[in-house]
Length: 330
Length: 281
Image 1 (tube, rainbow over the protein chains, first blue to last red):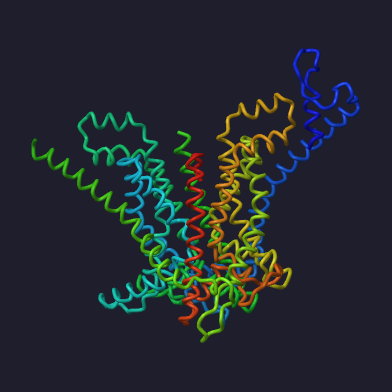
Image 2 (cartoon, rainbow over the protein chains, first blue to last red; image 1 turned 90 degrees about the horizontal axis):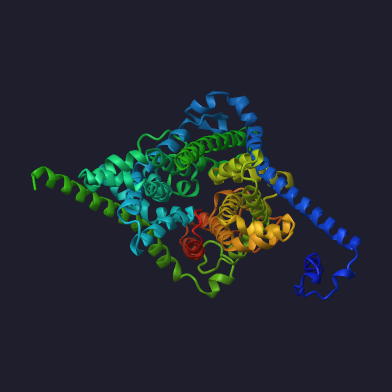
């Protein structure tokens, strides 16, 4: 270390220019070959560093490709045995080697969209609250941070809380409306998921709403529009694709969420009859049955489920990111 | 004022009220969860709880020492893998904004961010558990490292992009080689932004359960061998919360409380750091 410090000082213009250079060694004392050696070493180190960076850049690409290839390779067996019936088959019976994932597809879609449906009013309200009504001050700041903390709570804790608190509440609700009082089921998981995905659409929506040019809003106000009319006919149309991107990101989260759902959905492989009946999502089946899968086709069928999940969430996230990019570059 | 105008203003007021009401309602479930978990868990936590192993079914008492230690080991290992890698990747992305590889690399980091954690668990199972023939803490760490990576990369990249170019140019003008400009000038300047990303990623993986289900697997005994199954906090919570025994539920509440406090503390510290840096993560 000390060596290189000296080097820096020495390679500066010499003492003839009148400047005082604090160097322990006399600059003239360092021979040219030594100096050349040093700069050679520096260049070498620089090249190694640049190469390392490029390798790391490649490594991320290889990592993602590796994940995809692993999933595809491991699910080939299942694709061969089940074919296209896999996605539409209505029975999942590992004992008889029948693998149809329709119940899980339905379960995933039901929980995710129901959760989305419940959470959207809340996340949009937060987005409008923070983006338009109260962009500054400590109360909105507190609200913003608290909403972001919702995303920080581990999903297993949501699951445990749901199991202990929400399930009994839903059970008594179900017995009131005459459904089978199980408590565990698609409805309960949707409620938990709805809470978990609020922050994603909310924080994106907030930043999108803040990006609306103020002259547009002012023009509307000067025409005599009320606050609601400005939001309705200026802000919302302007941020439409940004808000939609937020919904997509939330949906991606909801589809892939595993633990909280696994704990409260009830875990049956039957086709859910109503939103109150227990079911299973793609992620929860994998979580429950992966370590129990005792023969190759069973395991492969579960991995194919993972592959489907991977592809679907990647596509949805990419649509969301593309929309965001479109909005922010304009 | 005409009735029509009054109606419009009223409508606007109603909407504003509704927005405020719904926004505040968002906070309610979080508060419920916080209060409930802390109430249920805080009474279980004492020295005995932190330093003892879980008791078998039927015996009350016991602790979560194995899960605490396991969590620490698994997270430390994941950090050792992901942090240098992630920071280097972030540097690459911020230094080569327009190159083709940077485009693909950025895309892959985006993809990684959205991959469901359970899928990463499956992949880690096939990369490490199956070849070695045993569930292991190491495979869990690799799975968690993959989950950490996108957050570290993004925060590094965004932080470095915020730094003024003149900083780098000044260092170059002094004749510093590229690697020293980055390591000695750019990184120290952006360190707090990068650190906040690192802390956020640690907070996130501490609570991840799904990737550990078929990698670290869980272990009722104290274990420090990273090539063998190991318990961790979220795994313990999942296993004990879904069990029918009350004693185990008590352990799970205590563990949830510790996990929650840890995650929230990390997040709040990160918020305080990023407020200075205005990094969007």
